[in-house]
Length: 326
Length: 293
Ligand code: SF4
Ligand code: SF4
Ligand code: SF4
Ligand code: FES
Picture 1 (cartoon, rainbow over the protein chains, first blue to last red):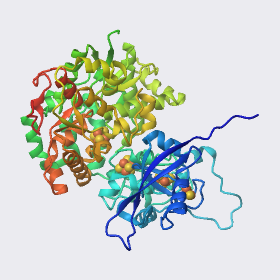
Picture 2: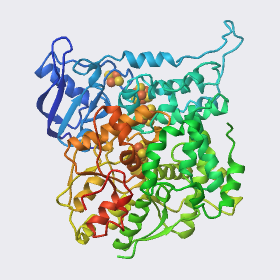
Picture 3: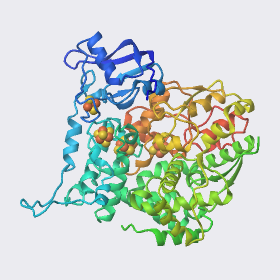
Picture 4: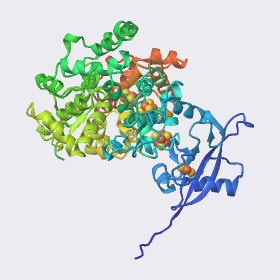
């Protein structure tokens, strides 16, 4: 059996980010025009730049099998594992001009190499290990059923490459925010039937650092080369907080809960009512903007809201389907 | 071509804080000869928050909304990115998990409804691009927007997660370099502005719980559009609109620079090009004054 496999080549212009924190005042971009074959991955290009053009070009790589997580960089703003990403796909997605950059320009040490200390600190902060009473001389193995293993939802496949972390706008702005990879790790252990940590779930529910400060942009889902879908794990951590009864009575939690209340009452959302319920007395800080909106006809008072038709159906469904408690 | 007809899921915002979006949607549909049957029975989609608290309830309610579109035998069209995401996500989960679908249908049966999975769910932006067609739209333009530099602001929930979006919409969008809204601007005769934040988040969903993060995102987005010489911004998402239009004071303070631009709904932009009047498009309902028409 022989299937013909044709290797094609094409010209690609690479704009490569260069910076040496020890020597350079500002970063700059170096241009390389190269013939690229359809067989190559992005890491091959990095290697060729180093071996054929400039030996000082620096980047991390180790396993070359998408396992160690060392080689994550950005191509045209998209996080990618250099050793896994085919050049063909990149050209198909972005055309023949590709910009090669480190995961975080703020944290560059040299070229593609960044200081990942913040990533590891946040990873450490979520108790990223099993907390369990271990019988040192067990009678038998500690078995986990396939159904229970499924609950991890593949969070255990994370290779800590940092692609999601450095794609996350909340990480960029809020330095306390743990970030999507740390949350995926938190979920991985909190969902493990053997784990009985008392603190992890509470830690990831704290304001500023915890899941409630996620902006729901899905950048992490898009960035992850392992399809971990970190925001999916964040959603599950939210749900676990309610299930375990540790959700705090704060503005973020009331905001999520408020939707159910509003739907029960009107079918649709009462936007002003939701803000009032979420903020409580702190609503005063929204009054200046609310007043401006009111003058522009952008605020409907509670009595002006058009409720959903067949509201009784909605109310019946809320009563019979809702299990969550707060 | 047969007349296009959809079941319209308005979402809550278009009925409350963005009345101009509702008006311009109807005005544009009218001009294009698209028939929209409003799903007045629909509930709130949960706006990407309800599922954090009660995932199953969120599924049931969204399935109920879709079931009403199915009753009409129509594709559901949304006019809010977040409604689109919640609805499409529900559809994806139910269509790919028979057990879950059955559980949801057990509940819906209590009110005499069933989710079958027969109706597609698409955003009005993609209905115009994929079903109506930009070539046809171009022919109908009476007031080309040629003197304007327009900054497209896509909004997260129409472009990410791309796997779901690309299974839902016929247009295949690259979330790192989306083009649909740019194409719409060009079809209306405008110049598009390319800027870093066009596919980034506006921060709307954490306005209350993480006000600083939200304000910086808003500020950066408007600043990026201003630096790209935009005369105004345009978005398919009423939540992005609200954030960019009404939160400029916080945004300016957060990034230490005064930012403000008119922010139009994509329906208003199309309406302008098709010759709708400012009154029909509700242009007076904006905080950042729309004073160029
Ligand atoms: S969805 Fe949340 S965690 Fe993921 S990148 Fe966006 S803000 Fe970060
Ligand atoms: S969740 Fe995905 S992107 Fe994030 S560190 Fe793990 S493997 Fe990398
Ligand atoms: S850009 Fe902001 S408001 Fe718009 S869909 Fe995304 S998160 Fe929601
Ligand atoms: S070199 Fe190890 S993941 Fe790419």
